[in-house]
Length: 241
Image (cartoon, rainbow, N blue to C red; front, side):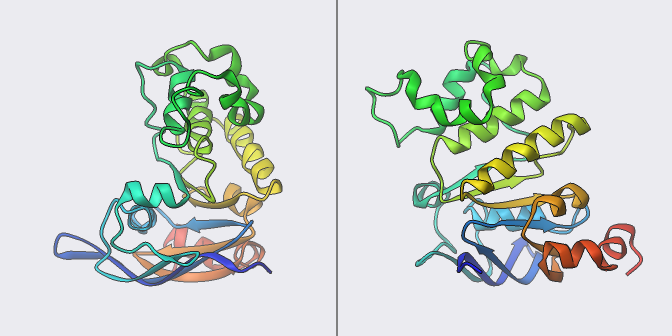
């Protein structure tokens, strides 16, 4: 069992006067995949936005290694080694695939290496499908290709923690399999991953640990196998509990 890279305690997040995340605890072990699960509206994206500095928590602690992230600005958290693959991909539609990837490394690569093809080696090794598309505008890619691009762009930062928000959303089953095969490869290489997913089945097949949210609170947490085999997943997703 590895030590936690990310430790969240008592996290509270509000939208205006309404609190939507109610004091949750979350651990992400170094080198492991942690799935943050829950039905639509459970608080997954709000939690991630607070962890990444896009929302200011109203309470609680977020420890990343030895650093406290709560209240820290998003660009500083990114510099600390946390990279996000956002919901909906959010690629730069008018830029080429190559320049989208390079944007991911902005601030980590020198001006001299900006155009060096070798700088794209890691994302292209993971997603060789992107190599023949390097000069194509990202807006002309399929949804699956854009998801690969968004993941490759995040990896250009060489993050200590890779965070993904709904990576399977809107994708065909075969494309989801390809995306999760890439995540499994990253996990095998020691990348620490936190992914928020509504698709519990596919997430639990990959994850080591899982946290199940229900209306902004933790309904269950433990090993992915325990949650996968337990009754609570169906209760939360089907509204029986």
